[in-house]
Amino acid sequence: MRPTPRTFSHIGLSVPDLDAAVKFYTDVLGFYTIMAPTDVVEDDSDIGRMCTDVFSPGWRKLRIAHLATGDRIGIELFEFDGNHAPEDNLAFRQNGMFHFAIQDPDLEGLLKRIVEAGGKQRMPVREYFPDEKPYRMVYVEDPFGIVFEIYSHSYELTYSSGAYT
Image 1 (spheres, rainbow, N blue to C red):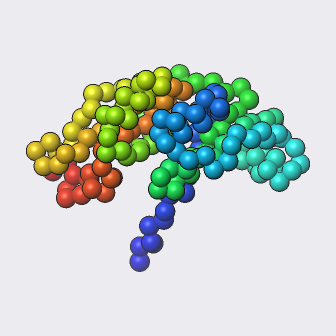
Image 2: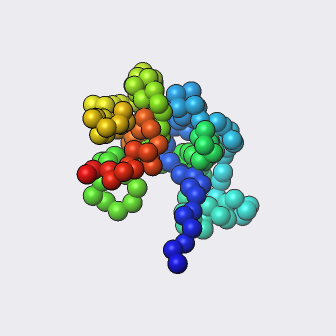
């Protein structure tokens, strides 16, 4: 028997400037702030020990904020001591995550706000199934180089009925 599909809880993003990232993700994408930026240090507190479990000893300090999307998905933003941008912010041949996606029926309006806020448009807006469905998508970057995708419609509607056939 197949397991029941799990729900998505949250994603963690590493950013170079936590305050600027919180402002971008709340003001431009409309996410809710659940926990304002908070300092965490490597110590013997519960959160300090948990971070050491995850990051190994020597992580020293970080700042963290918790946000949420309109459909209650969490966005954890981390500012680590010594944060730096990768050489390739779209390492699609490397194991692991290389983008996430959000949805907005006003894709073009959101795209404009992202660019005006210092983000980048990585490609032209494309239509999925232009003769069948009015669904559009575009890859963008936030002002910190994190790549994500915008869909005009939900994932399951976009790919229903055979997708690329």
